[in-house]
Length: 87
Image 1 (spheres, rainbow, N blue to C red):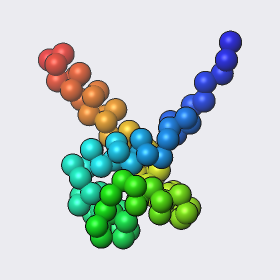
Image 2 (image 1 turned 180 degrees about the horizontal axis):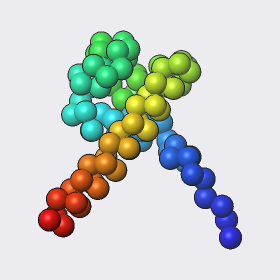
Image 3 (image 1 turned 90 degrees about the vertical axis):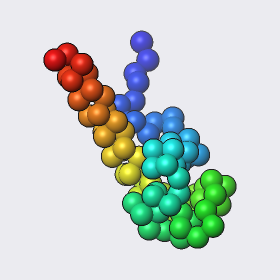
Image 4 (image 1 turned 180 degrees about the vertical axis):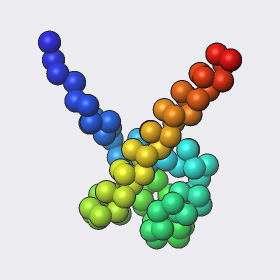
């Protein structure tokens, strides 16, 4: 039996992470408010952001940390929704 990684980032591509964050925050404007880096605030696009994030480890770390936070928030929201439906 193969062991699955418990790391939520395992196997997740940077472009998919970025697209999920842009969707969650309804665009680059709000994402840029969460992480104030130029690739999100000055003429942003997925491609230009990916180029920057691949070359800049500290920025990539911030994006990955925010993504993990968003995953936790989604999980909490889902549990809260289930609890409200039970009552």
